[in-house]
Length: 193
Image (cartoon, rainbow, N blue to C red; front, side, top):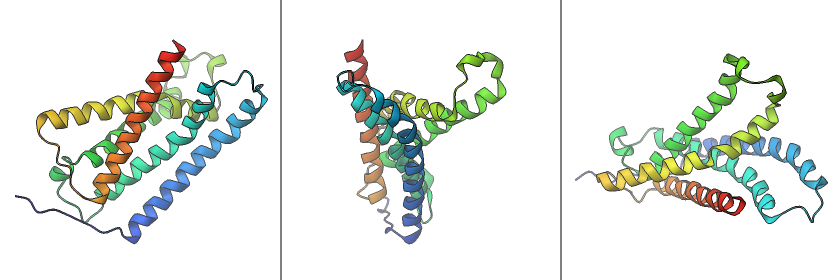
């Protein structure tokens, strides 16, 4: 039987958390400074509960993305278990899924328009702000579904090896938060549709 691997929270981990908080704050600042004036101009009678919660979603998603990427980076930092064992932990796997989906979305936002500008009408060209807002709001369902799918495959395939380790537990918390965002997204779609 494999021995349990544990690593204490170190200074380098704290530095990774600080970078993640700074990135989430910068992304949230873009969202808040551009979106808040629009929301404040809407009369309170027209501002529904769904739009208020949607605004909060735009603040929460950058923190979830930055936290998930930070947890993955901390999980991959040495000393760590072999990648084979790390790939069986649900927490780092969920954070890896988030990082992969985010990287794909980021590439589609930044590389796609640069390589294929003729696919978009000039009237549809938007500012960097709206691209980031769309990025924050658009990949919630993909990320949540990907985490659910990977976790179901891990459970059914017998490769789910959750360990009582702080990185695995925080990764699972991040995964559950993404699944809650997916549930919220499905409730909003059902309410609007």
